[in-house]
Amino acid sequence: MQRFYFDHNATTPVAPEILETVVACLGQVYGNASSIHHFGQGAKQRLEAARRQLAGLIHASPNEIVFTSGGTEADNMAVFGVVRAAAARPAHVIASAIEHPAILAPCRQLEAEGVAVTRLRVGSGGVVSADDVQRALRPETVLVSVMHANNELGTIQPIADIARLTRAAGVPLHVDGVQALGKIPVDVDALGVDLYSMSGHKLYAPKGVGALYIRKGTRIAPVTYGGHHERDRRPGTENVPGIAAFGAAADLAARTLASEGERLSALRDRLENAVLASISGTGINGARWDRTPNTSNLYFDGIDGEALVIALDLRGFAVSTGAACSSGAIAPSHVLTAMGLSADRARASMRFSLGRSNDAAQVDALVEALQASVTHLRRISVHA
Image (cartoon, rainbow, N blue to C red):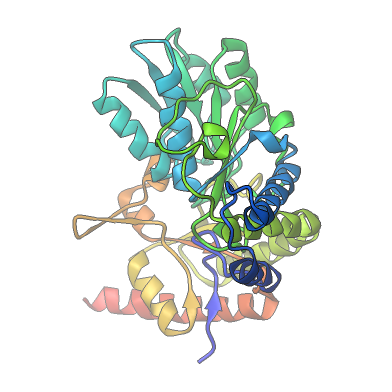
């Protein structure tokens, strides 16, 4: 049976040209980048070349890039680092209610430590209001964290508008850019952000490597302790093969951003239009415009999303619900319920995220599989 992958927001396959970089580094560049001998300096050169490549993709200075083990570590470094470096006590943090758990969980920990946290709800479009950010700001606010693109909906947040407000208030703005990087243009200067989190495995590099952009002059305390790596920002021997691959992925994204974005948005629209026209009781969650070109979140009324994931997998299609499994019970997506969806509709929703390997024939085959699966599941639901 042929299998087709429509879950690129969860992770991407390593691109062939990036795999070549990983293999070459593993075999040839095995020195420690902190060593001063020939082998160490060879590793250092690959490390700094990748730093320049990633900085180029987001229009930053290379010395503002800190490599991490992934997006989660970058998010934690930003949230804990900025809050713990802040002089204000008691401190206050603002985040949106639709953030990734890599932001929401650190916020819960900060609350346990006595930090006040405001979680901003979103409207039915899945977009944070800059006016809500303005209203939530307090004299003791030390950090605002709003994601660039939502991982479940693809909705793009008004980061530049929010940044103008935070800059005027003298409050650092952190942006989780994990789902935006490589899909839409990112210019940290034009956006006005102070910190920006990134992850390699969302743009065809391996898992286990990420980065945090820290604008020069931003105060941030260390979160982990050890050696003097990454300009004293993040101790530990750098993952040079992973970082080199991340750099190569940044180059690939820079070359293909416009053409691939246009191709994927056409495929996404093809998928959505076909589903809406051929399957009753369906609709699009969130705003249909101003989202990443590869992401669609659709609801199928009367369907259990987990059952539909399994049904599609049996037909050879990998998709996602975006729902979290907690204590053995399937909880509705916090993103969808924050938008005002009922728990039932949230549980009946599916995320489709396209990538380099997908084409029109695969999209059409997915629509056929959806038609058959939804019909079958609705029929057995009626007779249950």
